[in-house]
Length: 141
Image (cartoon, rainbow, N blue to C red; front, side, top):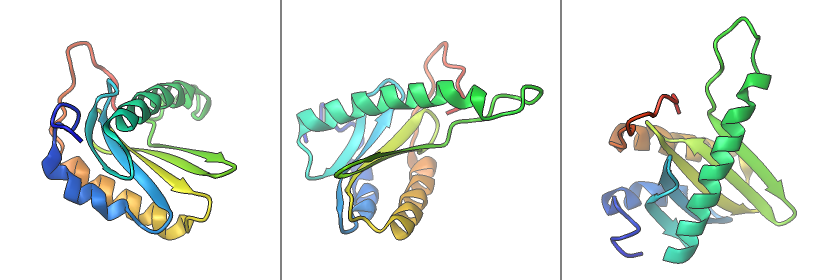
């Protein structure tokens, strides 16, 4: 990874904590789809493409929140999206102000311990990330 793509290389050690058996790679990205840091078996170009896909997925998922709440309540906040494929899973989890963590796994991943580990890491990342909202950002996640 070059420093052009990985803006916060000091966070990489924290992201390495998600590299459990059957985890392929992980990316932390800003809301605009730019890579903050990445780890695992992922090239710089693939990290950039994965982050762009995750940003789009996050936007689509957040748009669906209106279907998960009572119309008399405030719109619920988006927290996580999980996609299942024949060969694995993509996890996308809120990881701080306007930042997200995406993890790619094989189908053989042990979902319980993996999910617990991912959420523990995003809690740590949330305290470390300083991604500030850009002007015009009003979204909570």
